[in-house]
Every structure is written in structure tokens, then in C-alpha cells.
Amino acid sequence: MERFGIQTLPAQFQLPYHVHRDGYVTVVLEGSYLESGDGGRCHVVPGAVLVHSEFDAHRNETAARPVRLLNLPLPSPVPGHAHYEIADPDLIARLSQADLRAASEQLFCLARPVLREIDDLPGVLAQHIRENPCFSLTRWARHYGISPSYAARQFRRAFGVTAAVYRKRARFHHARQMLERTEVPLADVAATAGYTDQPYFNRCFKAETGLSPMEWRRFRKLQYARISPP
Image (cartoon, rainbow, N blue to C red; front, side):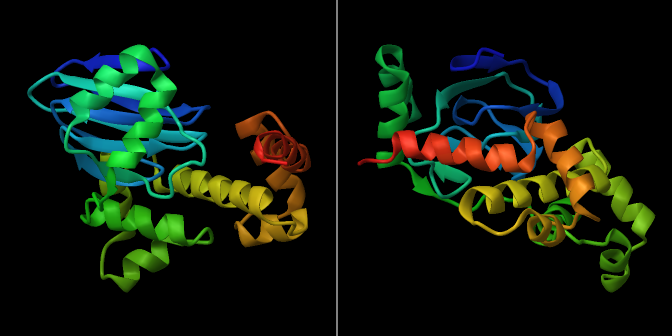
């Protein structure tokens, strides 16, 4: 897809689970679709605003009508919620014709946060995985009186990836946030995020970002230093 601007998705279209290296914001202009990804599972309609952070992964399924979207750069600072809504999405589309970044800034002056997550079995399972990097599908399924294999099948059908892959991504996001927001030693970051040991953590993290955890922490510090006021 084009990085920013207006995009059209065909009716009855499925976009497989995919990763975006850079963050962006989506405003739904027309149509509706189902998005299932690292931030949960939600049904979005015109006026919905979705914040996709760096390295966000998701799949999309459109309904009977085509969908028109507006993709904008993330404003600074990054919004604190994943889902918002705006009463007049066409206003933001018009503003974007002149200045994409200004349109993004104005969007979050007008939008309000909302809860959109679907709370069916795959949605609830995804939430538990995100909240607990050491999550065990078998223990979770038995606690709720569900067959682990049934839960796994339902999850894969909804998200397009296995619960194990989703848990791996949840660990990565958890570790990345710790690296960026704390000075916790790398070994403790690895343990807290659910990695078996630091070398394994290093390999997994570099596979996602191209940088080791220490390199990523330094890179982020330099970035924040450039944008922070003196």
C-alpha cells in the first residue's frame, strides 16, 4: 500500500497478517472491516481511527462494500490509546490534501478515545496473551473449561497466526517498551518479557528490528534527544 494518503480496499477482501515497520494512523472514510492484530480484534466503521505503532502487525477483512481509508503519519507525541472516533472524517481527508502531518495533528484535537475490542473467545485470548508475556494457552483453556486445541483453532481462524506467534510478538512489544522507557538491565528485560535467556532474547529482538536490544536502546535515546526541547 501507499505509505500515506487515501487507500481503497476491495469488497470481500482479506489482507493476510503483516507487519508495518513504521507507525501510522488510519481513518476510516467509507465502508467497514474487521482488523485483528497486535492491538486486539475490532470491527471498524466510518469515523473510526486506529493507531498503529511501530512494528504493528494485523490482518484485515472487508465486508460486502469496498473500504476507503486515509493513512496519516503518527503525530508527536504518539496518542495514548489504540482506538478513537471522529464525527467528521471527511474534514480530515480534506485537510490531508494540503498537509498530511497537519491533518494528523488536527485529527487528535477532534477525536475521542473509544473501546472497540471484540470480546469473543479469540479476542479475550489475545488480550490475556498481551497482558502476560509468560502466558500458557493450556492453563488458560483449562481454567475456562475449553479444549486447548479448540481455543488454538479459533484463535488462528480469527487472527491468521497461531497463539504462539502472537505471544512471541507480545513479548517483543513488551521488551521494546521496557528498553525505551526504563534503564532495566537487559537480562531483566529478557526475563520479564518471558524470554528463556538473554542470548535468545538478543536473537529474537534483532530479527524484528535489525538491531540488538542495546543498540535499540541507544538508538531510541538519540532519537528522543533530537526531538526533546532544550
